[in-house]
Image 1: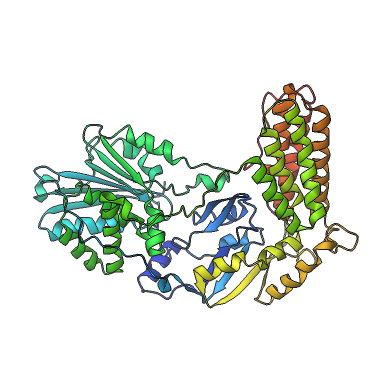
Image 2: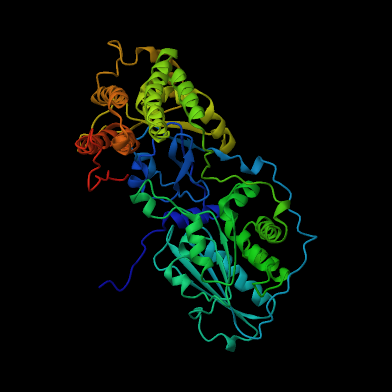
Length: 555
């Protein structure tokens, strides 16, 4: 077996750390995703295997975004077959120019900290590359500043970035009171759960005790490697919180990452906020003076880290003083059925024209009338309203051009970066070569492409006509066929829908949910969808659902 692993060069995570500390020049290129263009197919995650490509929930479903706080800028995500990526060369983050909300903790009461009559055990849980071990080391140093003993043991394995990390912190008056670096089973006095997935795992739960442990959690759930394999993976914070809560005597959770982004424009401060919260709760045996001194000794953005610690203290004592923070991964307010239909019709009018939007309204209305006539609720109509829009608003060259120039992304870009040169990464079928697998290769286009988009979007009326220069491609032909077949299916529903086949109709109507992406990625998804539809239609009109539902790959 392998005895020694030798790292021949620094990893991307270490490069990012050195850049943040000013030990090397920062990378000149950054990446952003236009979520309006993104289809949520996950090809970028597969190509990069990177957890900085995160999900963001939108009105039109789950998309992708780049977490700029953790991005290692290796640019491999750009290889995903999708036109939603841009790279910015020599752009500067605008965060430093934004006014920060005030953080004033001078009036907060000082908590009564543990007396250290015995060793006091604190467990930090997080993921690699987010600064968990650094904060743990600072807390251990704070104990030494106070004249006490402390040990810090980081269980990282080969985690590097994105893997589970457990930092065992043990505090005592004398070194002899600390017999081992690891927190013994069922002996954790405090768990600082910067990452709930790790905290709810067996290794961490085994260290908790229902009559001893207090646990404080960051309610935001960082995407795990499962998200790379399963693009629809749900991250159930409530379920994870419940799992931890059952193992402890005291539990509290709040969205520390959202506060870090709101107050500091950087998620890296999440862990220090969590440390401040636990300290203010009286669960960490160090002094405030010692903590501040240790932060200064660390030498990296000392004032910001002290402010983050104080922000956590405020969250523990008086959260009403904090500004309301929005979820950085997006939240979607449920719409009524009428609101959903109106929203999608308005989008289709912009996509094509009034007649196209009217065609959508009529298609949905006929299904709604039939479902209402049979007194079957509105689940089918809601599915039809959602996915009829999706198949009608397929993202061809004209739509991608419109979405690059409608101003929405420009605003987001200006809020994130200033200056720099923008590059687009596209694979136009007319001019792109194919790789060994027969897939189009992406090419890089400079800022001038924006003018090309402005021109191209004006020709959307050519869409689907004989004069459409892009309409001859197999992808566009299949997209139009999918749309027409779907609309024909809705007409069939109005004639043949019954209470017995209602659930089957919903399943058929929702099949387009799995059709995502561009080019060969989308074509593969359409192939899968056709197989699913073929299986589902075998149960029509009697309403027999397949005994074993076909599961789409990566659905």
